Length: 78
Image (tube, rainbow, N blue to C red; front, top):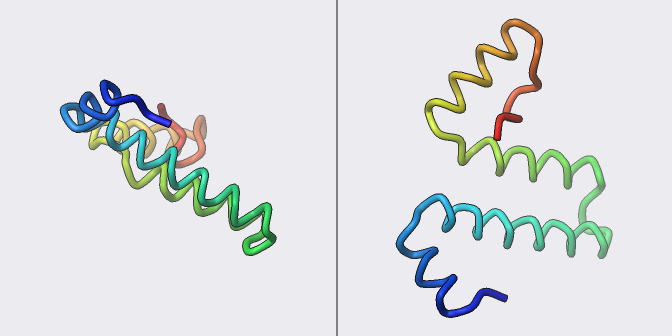
């Protein structure tokens, strides 16, 4: 659970806010997997899609370049 200070900081800093959303989504996916509502494969696909959706333009360009030269899976730069 987030403290009041952490929540206030999340509202002021987009990147941390986005990370909080990803944390919640990850938790939702874990529960769905545990309850056998989704497969492990679906879990990995949904979580990967969520992480790639929040990339900055710079991260997207970096990923595309590394994928082009064969040194990175798409959407994995952090």
